[in-house]
Image 1: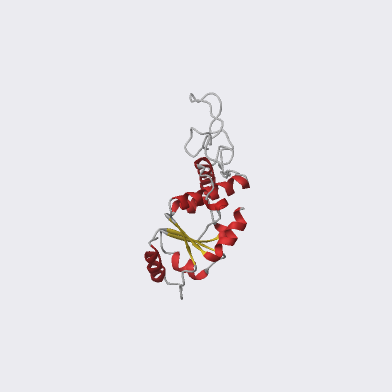
Image 2 (image 1 turned 60 degrees about the horizontal axis):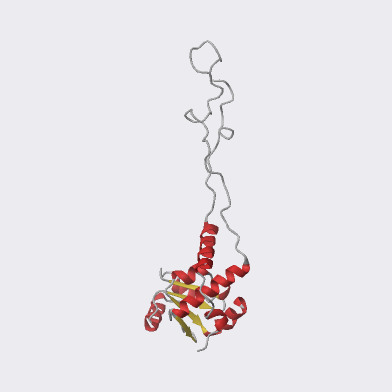
Amino acid sequence: MDLDPKIFDAPIRSDLLFTVNVAQLAARRSGTAAVKNRALVSGGGQKPWRQKGTGRARQGTTRAPHWAGGGVVHGPRPRDYSVSVPKKVRKAALRSALSLRKREERVLVVDSLGLAEPKTKLLVAKLRELGAEDALILTRERDRVLELAGRNLPTVRVLPVVGLNVRDVLLRKALIVLRDALPALGERLS
């Protein structure tokens, strides 16, 4: 079958693949690590002892960083790790990843995988038959049967065209595209 050359014969840009992959990994980070500084630790409102006359060093609070139970200096604060990548760059990187898989001759276009029921065993048999046990399966829309059959396999990912991303294409050795997903893919990437 002839695949759209705009999508599957695009120049392979490793710099874009790297940038988008890093952005995807950064967006996954929750950024919720936090500690309390001396202002946030409860207590420490009163001087532990008077300023002069005790023979000890002057202290203003028991919540200073060098005290046990004191605040942490320069600790982590909640922050957003996400990196913004322009839409054109994301699309170009996706075209690049798809072109890479085609150049390696690892793109399979099938009419359907024809699973009667959502059974992992049936999907494994089909993939073995196709010679693509480590694969990303691309569907037009969410396919509940395929998703349920493939979700327990660590080397298989089932995605609709809307969810297609660079990281998943690069992580899997083969790309299986259902024939009815090709027009939607062309619409998304052109």
